[in-house]
Length: 343
Ligand code: KG4
Ligand code: ZN
Image (cartoon, rainbow, N blue to C red):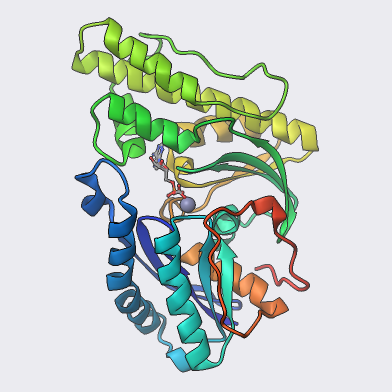
């Protein structure tokens, strides 16, 4: 099954060609980060317009790189939600128009299912069942994943997502958008324990999280002392340590609660090196294993959407090309496909 994947849910236009037998054949990404940086965050209308400009040339590029033609495609997969409505509409329109023209199915994919299954793009591939820690700009969630389409929500953030907390804290420290990677870089020159921040909800006894209080605590630190480059770096280091402590504690508790040994970490914050090092050590110590997507597939990309398309299109897809987008869409409401061929 040869699938073209289209991701346009936010500020990245991602295209990819995935084949069930041969794996990922080509992928390409255009990031709008530079365009939105001047505004300190994503401007939805600009995002949609840029997706329109990029999506067709990128599709042509990945098809050429994969050495295949439109006529060879068995289906098109696109991000149907959650995400920015205008941005989602671009991918959905192009995918359904292409599907109609080629007489192949166009399948709407859940963006978070893409993130969850993205470690299947690399080696070693995690076997089901596993616990997934999904940490992105919009989500901080723990799931028990028992198969394709079988996602039980174990825990969630009560307020800000982990990535959102990174971005907002970075802004408080005067770092450029997107804040997560910039804050992680600054943390490298910070001193451990020079300042102190809380570890929200580590003792809550459940698998929920909360990150908005941390941001407020950072604001208090920033206002209290005269600013210096060293203080900013110390705050960045302690903030990163606090988020990582919470995520590690909750992920281990989720493994205990489900009696599972495999942990998958997905979403943009999964690119954080401190988080990766701490999680790997902690899970290995208890005889388990952590799986990460390749760094390039941690953040938004078309490859994960093409992959989910290839997994789910085996079960068929509606072929009427009447589409809706789902800007708000709970992952746990997904159903398992009747037949999924897992790579
Ligand atoms: O998954 P993603 O690309 O987009 C969403 O679906 O949200 O995640 C983006 C988020 C942003 O909040 C960004 O700041 C964060 O991931 N992020 C990081 C790092 N790289 C990206 N946060 C911490 N450390 C990083 N190295
Ligand atoms: Zn994402």
